[in-house]
Every structure is written in C-alpha cells, then in structure tokens.
Amino acid sequence: MRYRNLGTSGLEVSVLGLGTNAFGGRADKSTSIRVLHHAVDKGITFIDTANVYTGTKSEEIIGEAFEGRRHDVLLATKVGIKLGEGSNTRGSSRQHILKEIEASLRRLRTDYIDLYQIHIFDPLTPLEETLRTLDDLVTSGKVRYVGASNYAAWQMMKSLAISESHHLIKYASVQPGYSLVDRGIERELLPFCVDQGIGVIPYFPLAGGILTGKYSGGSVPSGSQLDVNPNFARRVNSARVELGEQVARIAAEIGTSATALSLAWLLHQPAVSTIIAGATRESQIDENVKAVNLELTEDVLKSLDEISKDFIYSPPF
Image 1 (cartoon, one colour):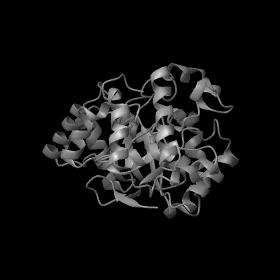
Image 2 (tube, one colour; image 1 turned 90 degrees about the vertical axis):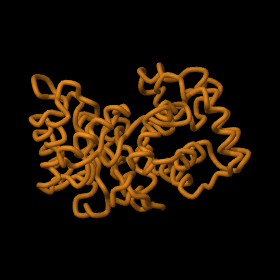
Image 3 (cartoon, one colour; image 1 turned 30 degrees about the vertical axis):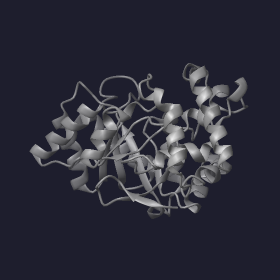
Image 4 (cartoon, one colour; image 1 turned 180 degrees about the vertical axis):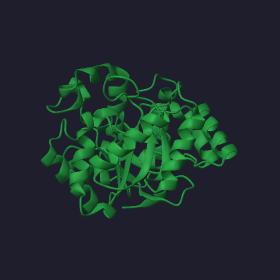
C-alpha cells in the first residue's frame, strides 16, 4: 500500500480507501466485517462511511469490526443528509451537527472521528455557523480533521475564505463523484483543489461497476448494482457502457484489469489523495489493490483521456 497526505494537511491516508455504503445492505454484517478486516490486512487504513448509510447500520458494523483495534484505521463519516422525520433532521446547523456527532461516535464505538465531512452543501445554514461548530468539535478532540462532500468550487472557496477570516478550522478535503465516465470536476473543482491544496476523495470511481466492464454486451450479473438496485438503471446508458468496454480493451492490452486501470487512472490525477472504492467481497479488495502500484505510461494516459474526454462536459454520474 502507498500513502499520501490528505491535501496539505499532515494526515496520511492510504491511496485506496474503502467505501461502506453497502454494509448492512447488499453485504450483511458478517460479510461486511470480513471485508473490513481484509481491507486492513491489505494496508487500507481509510474507511469512509456516513450516518445515513443503510439506515445507520454501516456505522454500527464498522464500530463492531474495529472495537479493540481502533488505531488500525482512519474513520471518516458524514453528516447533513436527511435522517429521520421532523425538524432538525438534516443539514449542517449547529443543532444537527452536535446531535449527529454524538450518535456517530456511539455507533462507531469511538471517542473521535478522524475526518468529519459535511455530506452536502446546506443553503439554509450560514457557513459561519457550520464552520464554527466544526471548529469547536476539533478543539474538543471529538474530530481531528474536517472535509466537505458534494460541494461546488465556489462553495469550497467561500468556506475557506470564512475559515481564514474568522480563524476557524479549514476543510482539508472534498469528496466528489469522479471517474472516467464522470469528469465534470475537471472544469472548476479540480483546478481549485490543486490551487488551494485541498485533497480530493473521489467516490463512484468505478461508476457502480460500469468501468469494470461487467455490463458489456448488455449483461446484468447477479448481485450487481443494476441487478439489485432498480434506481441504478438511470445511470447506465450506452455511452457509459461503451466507455467501459473501451477501458477493458486497453486494460487487456497492457495486461491488467479494467478495475485496476480505472482506479490507477484516478491515482494519476492531480490533488487526488485517496479513492473510495466499495467492496462487498474480499476478492474485490484484492482486485482494487492491484491499482496501487500500477504505473501508467503517457501513451496509456493519453488514450484514456481521449476516449473519455466527452465526459468532462456530460451530466454528472
């Protein structure tokens, strides 16, 4: 495994992380715990979850899996998406954040979060309120670093400016969708992150399996996203499937898999600190890890850029 700093912070993260939004859902508890332990055995330290994943089950499973070995991992979770009914059940207000941090700590069976992320921009709460609350959590020791998810470049820049002017903790990272079929962040967000030293943590790096080539020829493998999640069908179109097939062909030419090639391409992009790759089986961890030491030539990078350049301007995945 290789490790990089999260943006310009001092926090070192494994370049390959583990996404856990299937834990307690498509992967039951025992399977999820095996996958988590296998990931750590392979050198993966960055474990990403959220309070809303599988109705809080993901955090609960992670807490159980690492009880007694908390220092083996870096735990990242999120707050902000609606969780439950009634008032103050969403957003990044002080009220909601302080309530949810306690619930996440309890479920994760820990007294601190390594990276606490605002899941989505909240237009109804002043950024000063959000950042002051996050700053208080860092001061209290309940949070080590803070980040954002699904923020636009202007939202990140406004946040950094407020943190600077009010002497508050700054976002160390941002978590956007980013892959060969979803390159929209290259227009504004990625250049911003390079300029400001913000770590990029791509999610959906394999586009739900499209970039593994599993949907080639119209196939729908049993247990795949397309098989078990009817809503996923709206993300599968001919252009994306065709790109997945092209990536698979290039991968075969250089003697690797489409999965490893797609992840390695992301690791060659500027500002990327770690990649959130999900897994519901130990074998998927083994396949994903192949990307870590896969060096791509300029010719391969140029080919991948050429076949995917239209996705810089396509709708987000």
